Length: 94
Image 1 (cartoon, rainbow, N blue to C red):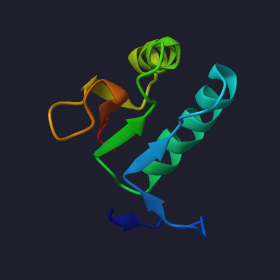
Image 2: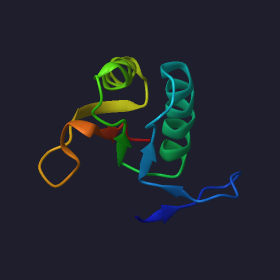
Image 3: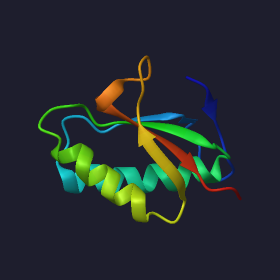
Image 4: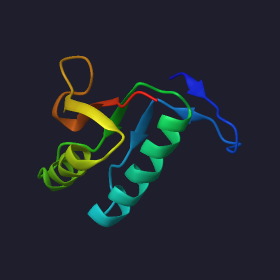
């Protein structure tokens, strides 16, 4: 995974966040912070790993992505990308 840095943040930003094993509230909070950091780092595409499970976290993540101002589009992961356990997100342009 490539790592990116931007001014004001000491830890590198990767192009993937793992939200597995979190509650919906915890996951959505982390997702929002991550999307802001990824946008500021200049990333244009990121992977959100939410797992398959019962689909509750996947649904909540995709609903949040649909209304997030920094998200241009999102789609389910395809073959070789993680399938139903991953959502691929295109971030808005600066």
